[in-house]
Image (cartoon, rainbow, N blue to C red; front, side, top):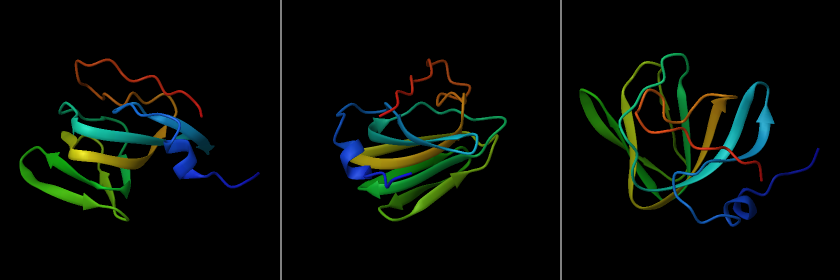
Length: 118
C-alpha cells in the first residue's frame, strides 16, 4: 500500500483516448486518460460510466438531452443504457472507474482500447 501520484502516471503517456489502469478497486479498474476531440456515441448496457475531470474541461453529449460541460474538480456519471459521447476541444485529463473487462467503446463499432497498467 502506497499513494499513487496521478500527475506522474499521466506524465507517462501522451496519447488520447488511451486509458491506463493505475490501480484496482474491488472489481473495477481505476484509470487515467487524456481526451482531445470526440469519442463516438455509444452506451454501456450493464454499467454506469464514471468520469472525474482532473485538468481541463470536457463536454458530455447525451442523446436527446442538452450537452453538459464538466470542469476540473467535477465528476459526471452516465447511467447505464444512456447513449453518450465525451469530447474536448482542448486536452483534458480524466479519472475513470469501470468494471474490469468493460470495453470503453460500449456498443460502438470501434474496437475497445487496450488498458495497459502503469
